[in-house]
Each structure stands twice: as C-alpha cells, then as structure tokens.
Length: 136
Image (cartoon, rainbow, N blue to C red; front, side, top):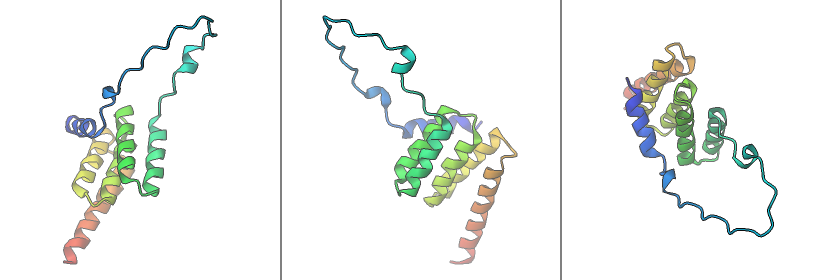
C-alpha cells in the first residue's frame, strides 16, 4: 500500500514539534484564581478543511513552503481524505515536480478510485508531459 511511503514523506517534512521546550510551572499564588473550564483552555484542533484553506491562502501569497506544510498537516489530520492528497499533489504540480504530484494523486485514488479531482489532475499531468515532449 502506498500510504506508508507517503506517511514517511509527510512526517519527515514536518518540523519536530516535540522538540519545543516544556513550559515552566507558574509560581504559586496566594490568592486562588477562578478555575477555567478545560474546554475553554484548550485551543480547537485545526480541521483538514481549515488547513487546506490556509494552504490555498499561503499559495496565493507566494508562500510555497508554508502551503506545502499546511497541506501535509491536512493529510496527517485526516489520512483518509482524498482531497488533501489532491491539494498536496496540486502544489507539487505547480512547483514543476510532476513525479511527487503523481504520487499524491495516486494515493487519493487508492482511497477513492472515483475521485474526480485526482483523475483530472493525472490527466492534466499527462497532457503537460505530452506538450513538453512535443515542444523540445
């Protein structure tokens, strides 16, 4: 199955989040502060949709590296979502890295063989390759 190599690529490309230093505990207060609910204290997790939207925004601003990392994060957030693989493939295709793009389109089709976005993207890659071969 192709997901194992892709997961390795994704994990090797993401920064090591575990390497951040641990926060020091706050000094004890003499006056007790009101307790905050646990749900309010935690930040909401980024959804794959939000990560892909941020990726598109970064790409439109010319921040290709950030766009790639956000699309990778969307795959990590939900590895069973073909649209995330297609989005990452689109980023690689736009950067002229057709082989990487193709691998992510193929991964999307392994999840959903009828995914129209991946099918169209592979066809576009084939057309671009044929055009490049005809125009040396």
